[in-house]
Length: 323
Image (cartoon, rainbow, N blue to C red; front, side):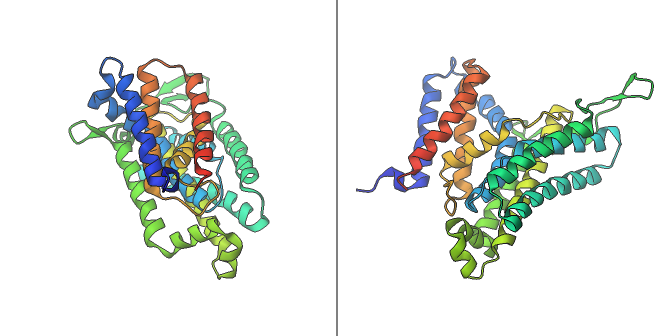
């Protein structure tokens, strides 16, 4: 008899069904069933989901990226400084931020591929470095429309129009722009994984790195690209974060890596590498997003949410042991 544990898609759908059932029971007087609640859930989970796109690529390759939250924070700070304080054009601010995020990912990937440093160690180092750099660049303060002058006073400047766009909703005020950006990232990741030679190489490296090397697959380059794209996703998420908060916070993204990993793993992508898909991550995003919203509308504290996230990661890993 075939078990549900043998099918990641069935396992993820079953988990989502359980969460939705939980929402139906603890619906906060019908709040869970309202479209506004689901719309806000999708908006709130979009930044995490963008990080999860990059994390999916890395985990399929047999790695892990602990630096995504810190790179997000650094990207948000740099983007805000360029667009708000420096008055840089939207295109230039976006381009510089995307290049910075990608560069951070490439550094991690290069250290892992060239020097064979464990992904945990390399990305932990980048996590600390990027967070420190964000605080150095920002002076340890939030980068907002309040610009400090030479005499110590503050002058308020106008918020760039791009921030209004990033924080807006479309389709009759029903879908947030950041949710659309998440959708684009998901489709792009799907195309890379399912319809390019690099995608097949990624699965091969994650499944058996030594066999992939003997088969002539450029293992180092494949890993480098995976971490580079993860950094790119971090930069996109950082821009979206800054756009929604109207500022760049050097502390932004703290613990976001836990949520991104939880989304990927609970969706069914194996932490051992070589197995998974971006659509499983979509289910993971919906599971975590709905669970967070259920806890929120029922006034459950943040400390409990963090504990639950840790428990979810452990449960998902144990559930995968039979696959």
